[in-house]
Image (cartoon, rainbow, N blue to C red; front, side, top):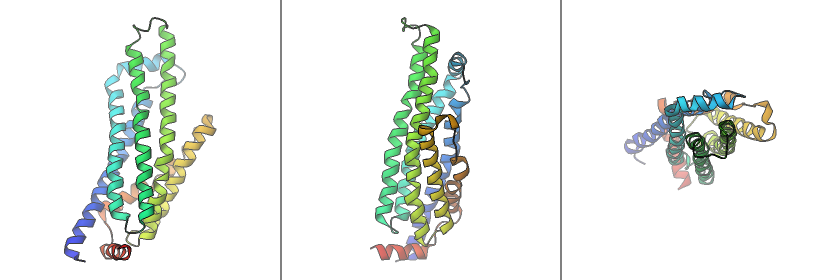
Length: 237
């Protein structure tokens, strides 16, 4: 295999994946906390007023949440090209989990749009008082949060095959694979805790996400060991 062509090609793929993956961090945090900053716990009327007063920001949060899922798809396709020589079945599983989670997360944003439709249709819904209509807002926001937890199952599951592939690759540090698998467990615990113990507010992923930062940073800065990657390609041929 010609090193002059493969080296820039595969490391270009690695760096594209790293840049896209890293972009999910600020996008994800902004999309996550845009709406939460407008919520006043226990006060539906204040929450409704805040959303109407900051509607542009609320809508921007929805758009960013949708954009995150689109970027996720491009990330997993780049990572598939990078990691599939290690184990094609596990690489396919990684892609499938993201392709299952992305539409769930995107459709979940309908709950956010429903909040806006409800608040702007208040005058037409004459069968309800203003207080009753405002009371629907926290319910829709809670449904949105549950939708995130459902999508979070797949955001966790895709990290397991990816962590396995990184660990077994030989062209990336094993510790990154371990951290990605730990990240998988964090998402899964958070999601199922939200379903089973909603009052506890479990958020382990805040402490287990480091693999999703260090892995793309490694791809961006160091790339892969090209000789070992080429060896894997020859073995899988």
